[in-house]
Image (tube, rainbow over the protein chains, first blue to last red):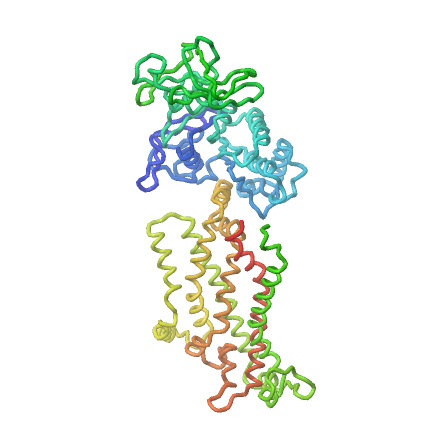
Length: 330
Length: 279
């Protein structure tokens, strides 16, 4: 069964079209990540699914049922917000149990579910504290706990990690991945961070300017991007683009090569002037100018390359991508 | 911390200026209170002297207690002020919430229309208000005053509160909606506690003009049983003779309740004033 089906969803604010003809299916138990640059409409799409915004046209079905006019609390969803959005006047226990009380669950059920969620998220020591007495990571766990206790058909995460520092972000990312395995629930996760998208998703939906650019598994999108935007958005450092004339091909075509597919070669076809070198230990990023196009090479291991040097790169021909003037993959 | 703030000379100058201002502001109040405890003769002979054994007298307070139903005036003022404030805060906050939270046609226009009241003094409409009160039979009731003061306070309240409510996190309100809270619960339980400093600011700005007003009590409710404190005190001021003991005593007593309400709101008020400047 499909957990969520969006059919021809459009959303406009006044004359501004924010979402244009969105069609997405989310299968039961699937982890789907919406990714795209800021302002691409991914958060609006999530709010449309949650029922916080109405669609202008199109259908939103959750678990097969048409939900266009159903209020958020009746949709069988739970949402985790970027700013945590904990109720400041309630302690952790009450924050988690409020929604269940509103649903009219019995005291026993509420207690059981809160206990289970707080154990799963290691929140037991803080259960009687107020949000202002918790750290950022703890607050985010409470916010996730508040979603878990409702046992929803569909979890919605709105950039839940962007307010956390780098170390905590990685831990929480793993926790969310674990949670998905344990709960076996369908989840939709919105982020602008392609690393989060690549590591968490079963399926990635890449959005740009309110349109779906491509849908697929992380590796599918990485190895087989439909266009220049998707190719450049996924992968870090991002793919190098330059006119094909620089490697002796047609001038009206753009060539893309991933940084890790470039390697140092004495007789390599690409000659470039090194402008900057990043020594990361495990790998070395060489940023160089190829005439007036900047390219980045990610070399595995440690290399002694200095800025100002002229180096030559080689590449594997079948690991290159070609795009036409409109950015469509050839 | 910048250098200027740590410099002891600057600190001294800053405190000196503040103390001077405090003295100037409190001086009239101080003069009223000390003179209310003196005999009439010593009020005029040495207005700035503290009451001593010879000049001490409670005659003013005795006159006030005897003449007129002073406690009734007191009660009227308090009822009018507290009920008007409650209405201003409740309806002001509700209107502000609607304006800041919901998108509807004419939202901006409605906001401007409500803010227009800040610029137009309500006293311009006195005649019309009086005619309306006569027609509805509300003349010489406390309701006449409460309604007028509520109308008078609403524009500023809506203006200030809607600005503050816009700053309340959308995520928080949406979290409430996802959890199944009604719009009323979201308003009363989530939003109102977060704009409490702004509410205190509005309360203080409205409280003092209402308490001190003489115009509307004189026109709309001059009857003995609905007189407010300010109006009641006027009986001691005559065209030819003024009973200064009584006037000063009445004024001294009128300060008290405002002082109490102010202390209640002041802690919130300070946070309200600084909350825009410091996050």
